[in-house]
Length: 378
Image (cartoon, rainbow, N blue to C red; front, top):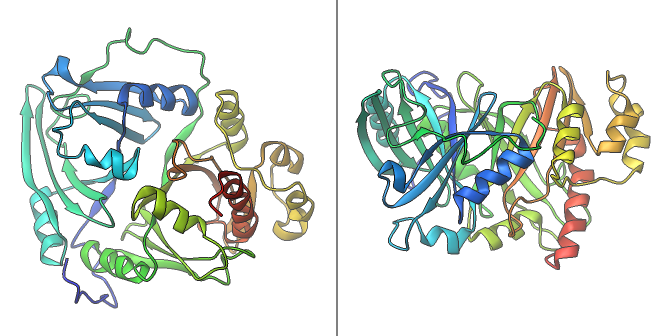
């Protein structure tokens, strides 16, 4: 990417039309066991597999789906895999956020023309169920964006993947969680790099900036961070980007950067139509969530006004509430899902609100700091 890249003041929206987030690819140490976790804890269906049995010699992959959310979990089958060092550097985490596009070649050419670093040139894969086309560019850290089109593809996911044998993942005791779609994906970058990547999304992908939080909005006694949110022209794709701000102790962003070995995806927010039922199901499935102090709920009615849900139900489950001019939202955050304090998930339900829970930041970060203290990394 050219370091002289400047933010375009009014991005042209439709030069890079992205239909939606097609899937999130995670690179993990053991894809089979990770698939078991996301199935049993988060209620995903495991729908497809690629590996030795499907003539994939260098990696194994599982495709998981719930609502419109697709995760692809991939593991190397040997140290010769070109990405195997990723596991030592980053641990399990997000490798790629893939977009469905109208025209792969045009999207790739246009983004590279605007300063994107190419990773994979437009490539056609074909099998007896059709043609699948993709190309990849780089974004922050080792993270990539793939552009793909499967308008002429009728298979289960992509060439090399086959529908999963039911006996590999027989129906279990988990409760479906009712997750519907990816609401937003948050990236953590180094101090001083947030504006650089905001400019990247504006200039290269035609995004616009939605909102900006500074360290006055997002700080506690110990840690502070800055955040800007960019979104695609249609508003369907939203990416908050965080950087650490100067603080007394090591902030959660610095902790992430240390253990992840650099910038990467911090969390994925998944939308539900009924957060109370979703969180009950996920707690039943043994998902661990962050908890805020009980006093948070005493202040809630005066802070957010009337809501449909019972405060008692929210307090029992640890669900947070925030309101803006357009309505309110409910949200809750899992603890990190792997051994390193890196990737976690957010569950969100929107009642009109299009914001990101600014009123919850302080309570949430104090809960995160409590966990950091337990880990000895604050």
